[in-house]
Image (cartoon, rainbow, N blue to C red):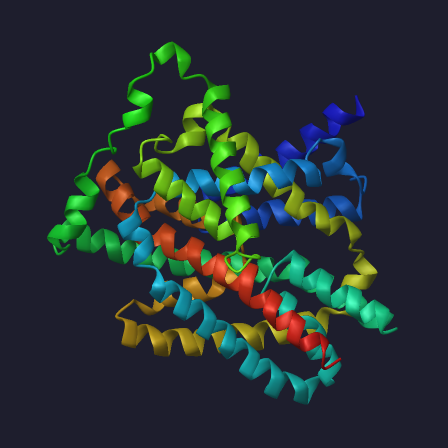
Length: 391
């Protein structure tokens, strides 16, 4: 009964977030509400092992991430993915803006070790936070060891609403262009394109296209991506290869478009991953959080200002809107799946027709995903590895 009760609590936290997002037309992001529910729950009535009891622990998450990334790859094409060099550049330069302001202005407010401890988690994910936390503990700086963890827990709370606002403005701009007919012929053609012919799949009778068969192929593609990553000594991140392989194997006809929706497991995997991410809030306490409020708020604000300044400047040269450029830079505060969920929530609310939805998706989702991988999976880990040497 404890397991089913924990599962119910997780689903309530998620669907309340979805309902609030729907009610406010994505103005208040679903992840923001869900994160607040988890924080308050852990500080009051939730057991610390709530997510594990609901069967959404680390083993489940390790399955969710590669499968979801392969799935998202099937929703794109190679032309869309190839255009994302701008997202890589903006996300890296956005992080550079954060580093510049936090290491200069931030160091005037706090001591350098505090800034070094917090910044990798500010612009990254769980891996960079754990690297810093472990190193601080080994150096005997136990008072600082929890700061990276708190930063990774709470930076999304600021990032979610700002990113959602930027994405909404960008979606409105794209929608206006689409309705006014100012979209290029090449972009219109992409919107009109039908699903690529599934050469391999078409040969099978419909009765054999079961959910298990679909999942087996997705898992196989993820394993191939993992194998190639290891052959290259992780030179190309495993997550990026999963996304790329999803695109390639979809265009080859080995995977259907939106493959996990056809298998009927997309929401199950996504909800499990959301629960796992918020599981890390279980180690927070009101006292611990309150003790680090000045560091968290001041460094976050300074860091986001740095992202904004640099992303706006570089967006002009790359001929992107400042809203899209800033949203891409803000993926450093989000990571996957938050970047996908926020983008998808906004697109679903803004788009009035299916062609509009496809147009917004092809212009907004790929850069957000690639930007997130660049910052959270790669840049933040490199930054953490460098900062550790200066502690």
